[in-house]
Image (tube, rainbow, N blue to C red; front, side):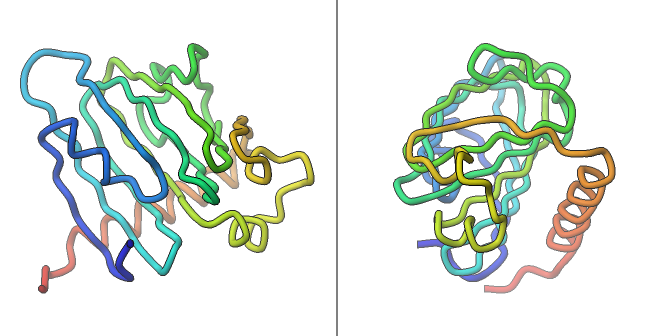
Length: 171
């Protein structure tokens, strides 16, 4: 269960990804020789998690958890990101209903945001249309955000991650 807190994580082994992304089963394989590293900042509030991260080049196979809705936004490195064999265009948001599987790969270092929340919370907060992949178990899709909406969302997440990284660590 995700704590109601901010957690900073440094992943040095791809196997550590398995439980690191709330609401998802996530398996990663490095795409280059040498050390692997990913840094994650996870903001948890009940069953909702907002996660920002930076990662070395990798290939990932992921599955949204049952009853969960997952949104993914690439912040940096989207020009080389491939999702399910298709190039990922700028300002695209990946949408995944509970149980949806996907493959993503990026031969360059990248930064991203993942929002995981129960389907009922996604419906209440995001008001997805009736055919949205967020409402259908196992479904997935892409949504293109407008430039202003994208910049506002990306700026908010970057600011939150910067504040979390600068905050004193307490146990």
